[in-house]
Image 1: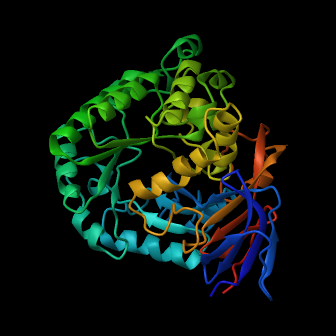
Image 2 (image 1 turned 90 degrees about the horizontal axis):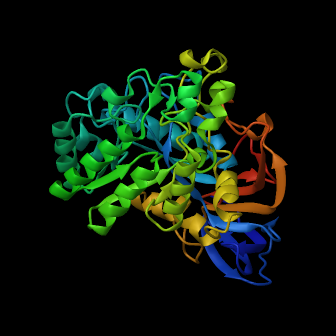
Length: 434
């Protein structure tokens, strides 16, 4: 059972200050001048209080790729970033395409305790795009999977995509598509554009993303089923999603923190920390996805946390793996790219990083408002400090962050997962109490 906590002086969603009492893992009281005999006091004077963040797109690598990350190390990284729930992508070994694997992931997350782990099931067997995986079995398992994705691979066959959308409709599931036409991106190394031409690297054209999104929103409309677009990255993709929503098509979309801040100009140094799929795009695309997030066209921010061992990044560009770690830095990047620029406020941050991802993933008990009676999943964030992001800020097993050495604002000071403190005074706890 969680200890009784009194959080003093926190700014609820960055607005008015209040005290919060947490008892038995639930917010018991909110007001001013509150106290409880024998309670632990958390001095949150001036800190922004946010509902615990929810990441709809995390690669935890376990089972099979524990050299990159484990569910324990990945959820410790999540807690460091203010996340209390993460959705685990299925590109593990074995692939999470059966009830047995997703239940194993769920159990490992429960044992770790730092954040709720909600497995995502593969759409196709082995993520090979040939036949549907056991979607119904995963949905009715103890993991109660509601999000299915072959992320890392596009469900490029339109008939299989249609059948998947039809299948998940019966239990209110959603297909999360990695929008990448494989024929248009063979051998691609970075965004197709001026920089790729100057560097002589094979380009990943925007149309490879946009054409799949256009096809899939029409399939979702035809079937009447939910579609979610992973890591949207181009101005054209924003336009397509905006059009689809105006038409009433049940589509949602996510953008990563790195696509809100970084551009393909960074590739000029051939530093493989900047190699990612989809690739870093042009400045015009960065501005477009920021606008799309601000006006609600893009629904959420998702990290696409993708850890890799150092040898997979400390090599020549063409041989390097795609992906960046992002759990510890996500809130700080959104603070810089969206809040400091005046595009959104802290209530919007709660919407795009907590309540909406939980709603899309149908994850009960998370993404709730900071109100009496709600589960005490809380992040306390210092928005008044600045610092350089270093390896000391990383708490997972891999260090392939694009932000190392880069100034970023803010710092998560406390994270509460179900009333249990996982981060205290900016430090992730080595062990959790009973």
